[in-house]
Amino acid sequence: MSEKKEPLVIQETPGEKHYCTCKNTSTPPYCDGSHPGTGCEPHKMTIETEQEVKICTCGFSANTPFCDGSHYNC
Image (cartoon, rainbow, N blue to C red; front, side, top):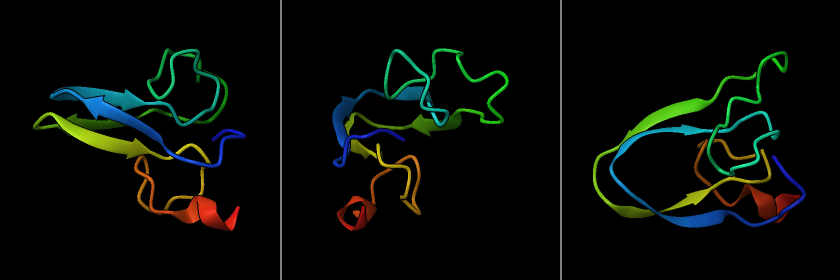
């Protein structure tokens, strides 16, 4: 997803989230609508409770949008 090799760690609040998958957003990790024409769609999910999440930034996680440690192999 980016040149960064570690996850973006954020304290996420409850609600529907739209995480960017096209790498063009100006508001990472959230979709800002920059994806038309890229063939990508945002990863939509609902966060039920406030929690710390680790969002993948390398694009290799098998558990997107969350980090699974795949960046160690980048």
